Image (cartoon, rainbow, N blue to C red; front, side, top):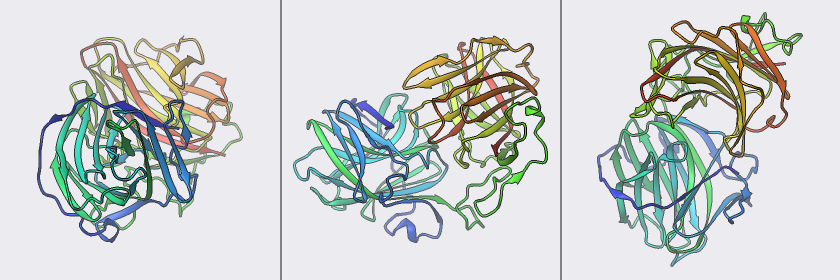
Length: 448
């Protein structure tokens, strides 16, 4: 089960209020929005976490609802869905939430949105026992309040169901309950990220909530009618067949695994369109942005590596992927990499290239990292102003690594073969000065 847990710290006060359009009518009836996910929790395979942790926290599908519980005072916990893993730009979401303990319980439930890792997100939450709500943000582990706890007649008390809503348009945030607007705020700290269902305790040692009728919408761009996110070079839609490759791409000409196999191009991006689905943002520790037809990542914090992924496509189980990368600047040792077969528990593989030209492949499983091979010298992998084309092939448990058309290594590992798969571009540095890399011409193929 992917669940994030946090001890509740004190929350500072910073109130910013403005006005955006109201959600007094249902988002589903608003022609400006595209529905991208609707879940009544009748299908146990719809993507939400299901498990029971050793401390008693749990989440499960139960007769058309999603039941979550937390065991311990002064804590919050949240659960994600593997389908809308990362929401880019403008969106709205709604969910029914019911306090199973009823009156007298000082617990809370809410929606986490624009989340990055476990210590950067916004949180809209309500206490049904007090018929109150608040809006806060957590940035690098530090809480700030956008709207302090406020009582509202629009929130139902006790064990009644409240329909909670969040709308984000650019840097404007609006929260609602039962079809009525509660508050709005302006904040530029986070522009994209995951969405999760949250519950928390205060003095009470435990709490339980049931969720139902989750809906996620994205704002339509002018002239569009479909819910498919834009891409620099659009991925094939579900209604049209993938684009077949007439020959093996030059990156993989020395592949043993791809002999007698066919490749279908399922996603490509030359980063010429700044709305193709990759996140943008910056902070004192670094950031990421589209940059003149490339995608740039930079870091100044040795303790905070950067990693991004694009959620507009679904990774096939057997695949080949390739991307160009070049080093723009950097004063110390740094690495760039491709993460693959990553799941919501942060398990997965990472193909890493070091700035001195060495390479490795690392497996992360339940927080433990294992090198699948010794760190090796690749001959001459240029990580200066000349780009290098990196490639990965995965067929079942077999994995191959490539650089500029050369096969560097092959090995087998059957640990991570199923589940949600994403591919992530990432980098780290050991210097406090800026290290920057640019990526280009990213392609993903399914292998048959």
